[in-house]
Image (cartoon, rainbow, N blue to C red; front, side):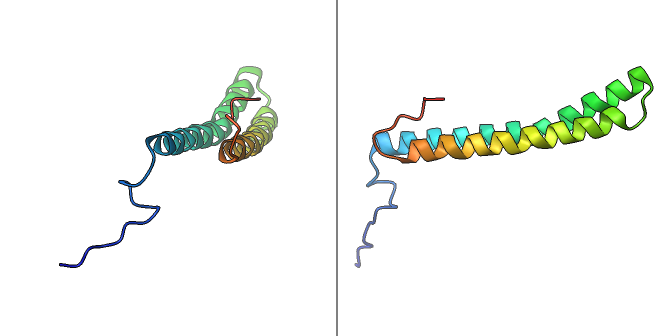
Length: 96
């Protein structure tokens, strides 16, 4: 019977602390991506509501779309920095 060699990607060889750190990074990535994506429809919805409330047809809707997209980009940039800090050894990634 031939034994399959285990490598660094084998879950049995991984350190529990390493798996925990990887799970935290994945959770942070999912949370950040969700927040970034949800910024756009929330801002557009707010702009739509303001347009209806103040009877200013596309003004606040367009402003909301620009604001939502800006928030999307800023959140993705911050997420990238957070994930990069967690990748570097010796850093805990909890710094702003």
